[in-house]
Length: 114
Length: 115
Image (tube, rainbow over all chains, first blue to last red):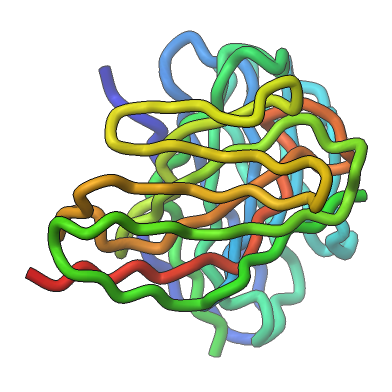
């Protein structure tokens, strides 16, 4: 089975631009979470989606938005990019939000803002 | 909310030694903790988890110890191998809950294993 797939793997954008990152969960997984990992730090929670509904949002500005599609894939959008948005963006998926179901992480999208 | 942190940013060991990576947490109501391993260019990989009704849990070559009194947990890796070289994170659910999907991570400990 394929794991969590994220695209693109690397991306370079200019300050002020907008970016869309994509995530395909493991087949059958209905929950997706997004994390931002700045170099040298641990991942920081951005969003959680389950059955196409937002189930949680971390401490990120409104420039960050996300959605989940009927096939459970997800997109993370970031508007008006800042240099500080440069990071590894991780997507994780799970069967459910229930506590006894683990989340599997993808390898991430490396975003560089110049 | 919950915050987790690690005592040491780096740990260097010889192949075959045992490794111990430590983590402190702030929310005494937290009742679920996870250790992740992250290799270069990859996402975090689940290693082992523990709930607050336990003080020890063992996996294959790994043991997690939880001390709720001092809000501390540790990851012990037995007979460390070069393939164990990676960054190790402890994580806990945000807001002290038990949802996997909303986690807070520590900064990580870089484990380097020398042959």
